[in-house]
Length: 299
Image (cartoon, rainbow, N blue to C red; front, side, top):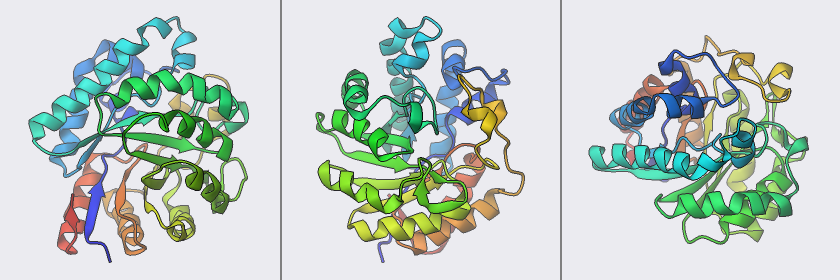
């Protein structure tokens, strides 16, 4: 069994919003980064202190289509640089770790039905992935909910010379299905088509992750998971330009309970683990402690 584990950070956008004390907006953590960039710095710093070895940039929602809604599309390069430089600075002060450029889904999370088709999405992603890859260590495509949605981002990432990790989000109550309803096992078709270093399950309920990992473990590729702590993805969040206050944080997924899921994933062979929305620094700290006590090396 592999004893080297990469420990991702936890929630970035949600943690930034929480620490700001601001009301949620459709711009989510982007608004906080504009108004209070020091909070982004603090979040990256804290995760490294808790044992994470990867800083995920606050670029998940900083997408052309989302910025255009509020007239900020011309600021996208500056915002990408603020996010990347914040993560790099925290890593450099910590003295160790990697910086992952977060690439989120176009238009809205969990809505592959309204995402542009792959050929169109590729063109939109091109400039973002090219720009972010110049300073970061790897590209982390997150929360892909359909095969076509994933292909759009992978087409663009194929043009850069950096490792690519891709995270898929599965049904809240069936880990064998993507949120689109497609079978998770069918993603093997695009993993074979593009150069992907790792495949992950992310922003899904932890109860369904083990089912998903048992499927992707057969793909002969590095794999892992980082789940969310939402009760479920509500119908209210699936409306146009939603805010995260349409989602409810679980009260039962404290660090101890969440870490038990993570150790189960590691026992299944996962070599990359961490947390997504509502999984915070204390969760990551306990996971780091348990991994070390179990004889794993966090790399």
